[in-house]
Image 1: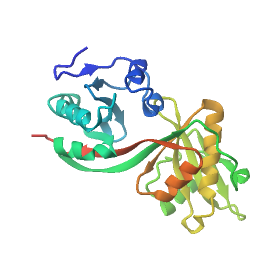
Image 2 (image 1 turned 180 degrees about the horizontal axis):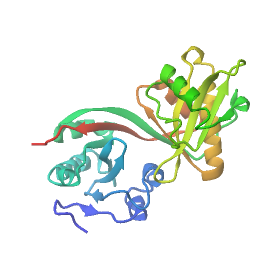
Image 3 (image 1 turned 90 degrees about the horizontal axis):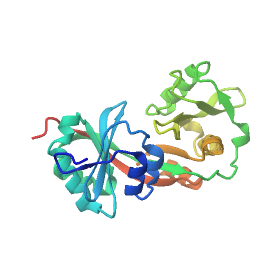
Length: 260
């Protein structure tokens, strides 16, 4: 099907995987069936999504479309689909941030990495000391830990969003590190809310929690994914050391509406 702006509509997940060369983000980060429309231009494709921050689109290149493909698709999106679909934010790979700024006026946002692995990590120190936490019974402790040491964490304890919590306690039983495993709309396991007491960072506690959650996910689902803020080199080093790879470093921006 051809959109009136000249974009092709991709109707199925297998077709999108073929178009993008079995892209790992498409494979594990995009649900099947799609949660919205998927519109392809000659060198890039836009994947509509609905999340906690509203309606957005991922825009990625295909077939070596590069910056010209991204820019052309953004221009086509601006000519109708963004307004018609009620899109409020767009995400492009960070190397194409200039293309987004040239086409759309934006109003804030962030940069973050989407990572994945299909390989179980080697055992790490402290992993044998991990304990399973309860999303309801331990919610108060989990909330207090995040509030004190990582307010931007997205584990959402007590809401039922998390399938598995793992953590570490000190000799007095105090919770000093924790992390969550949730599921994306695609069904892929996804790490969230990993937080360590700031006074104990650098001792490998977060690495142990990440390794334990990753091992659990891969043993049962064959993959584990995560998202991290791009301005956190220590976290990136931990994830890369555990076998994760970056599919996309995203430049996500809210649109300043209305567009002229």
